[in-house]
Length: 319
Ligand code: HPA
Ligand code: ZN
Image (cartoon, rainbow, N blue to C red; front, top):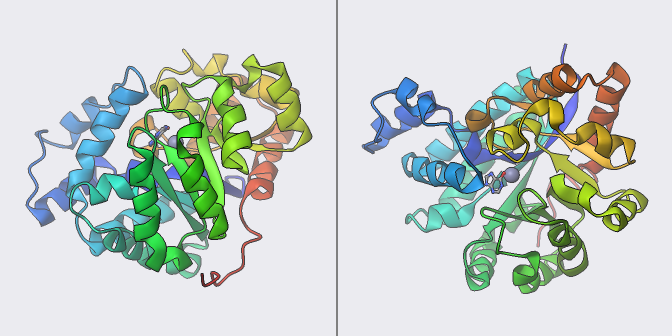
């Protein structure tokens, strides 16, 4: 039996399996530039974050209706439940859809349909976290927050994702302040490809409560001391780090050193359809490649519940 765990770093668009992509493409009359699911899977060879993002954004073309978003989220929740996930905090990228003419309401209400049924259907509680694309202008993030206003009863928090290097957290200070004023929880990707200074900036300027990835934290001892002291959770994604070449091989992943340093680490799947595994697949991979003891694995599972936004009331606060 897989350990019960919370998944805290999961992009719903990154759960689009080739089979569902082809099904939705057929349903919506979208032409995919791949002969079949095998050919598509063969395209999943990435050099870095950007080469992954190019494919990730282009495949989103198949997602068009509320039904599509509901089907995507329901398929993920079924797989997550089978891997021991009891609670999932799910990222979505509204700008990647509004840029294609899909309204934010279609995205949020479609996802919500699957999330609202999840406890009963899959035994998985959920939260929704709206991410801003950091390689888009800050103004676009502000407009997105404004467009999300009618749907904020569905949304627990905000995050920051997409191409990291050259797009420091400081760029999004204003939108994070506005989100905080609306009572939204705050997280951000930092230190995946970007330097540890981006982690410090996300804490200081954006007021984030968790760091997504934080892989490069160990490069800065003062930062490590601060993260340990304040028990700031890091949502690590080991299989993602290997596929995006942030680490050469899993056996060299810094997770054991990070845990030894006292950091509050969690293990997550990021974009499981692209990176070769869901939550338990990541747990199994680190157990095998890094020789983590059963006690260490239990610590990771415990950390995931400590780091979750489970203290937010259900049903969601009206804003
Ligand atoms: N990093 C940044 N942006 C992303 C990721 C990631 O791992 N996955 C989906 N968007
Ligand atoms: Zn991510």
